[in-house]
Image 1 (spheres, rainbow, N blue to C red):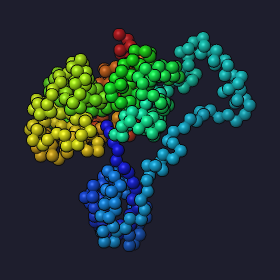
Image 2: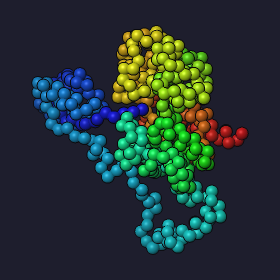
Image 3: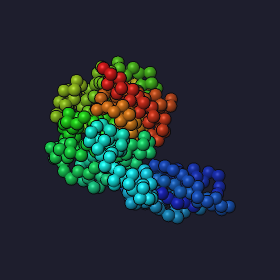
Image 4: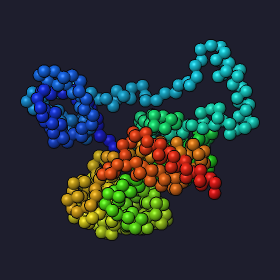
Length: 439
């Protein structure tokens, strides 16, 4: 989901008195800061030095947080550092050789003249490129920069940090080579033709941060044109993790998802994909609302029901999911007792969790934990392992069910860096892909 909070690390002198850490975290929270990591740097007789990572909306709010801390008796902010920018210096990924080249004999094996023999083998049997090159374990991460996080159309170069982040996660979580590809065009025809021409070097295509509505056309055309898996993460990655979250929420409340009426507010790339995922899972009634008639028509073409008024959707649906990016869109008085409400827009949800629960919702959550990282690495690991030629809805449903199965009671989804989750997703997707291949 969209996410554009700022992050800073505050080095703070905290009096070595019981309860002091609670005072400073409370001050940060009251000023609107969201605390991440807390790390002790030094413990002294008079004070303890701690690094506290804080997320916030803007620089004005940061000033308020700093002022609130410095007002506390005996507390002092020593430094404010931008750990995010520091972590990005020089980029987050690089290409490195897997084999040492330390002698002329090494050179002859990995390059000239020995490499010519490998080229001939691949020429005679092209499928062996997946054995003797990294093609079989490589995915292109393609963007035109038109829908970068919550920032919008900022261009492909400005979106490179996101692509590098995807690449780093591919490598760390499932051992895939993710290669960022930046396209300096918004024209669907040019995007499709470019990806078609570079596709021989990859075994999968992950479309990333490509805006609606041209993202739908680009994905569908590439799926038809290529014999390797193509997936738009903002659509299907988000939908997989959202379905997993809905399954978990239904378990917590005793609701039968397949018999419930589900409403989706916002039918952009993510919203429409969520509707399709719910229908693929077996939900019998899926309603959707959006300001765009084109979006509503698209939903109806996939078998969903479009409604014109949010109040009507709220009245008719047992489960409500919102991905609009509009804070406060859902009014407290619209909430029906016993509803499940997932207001997934970041940083501000369509309705605050506390408000929804006060109004009678049986379960409510925002989008902070619904992270695509839970989906796309394992999905592609599974399809590459199976050498599948496409990503299908049965594979995606299996991925969502695997994520839900790894979720602890009371949680919405698992911790995104848990390796067991990604192993489970990969195994589930690979199993479905192999079984489909046998039919």
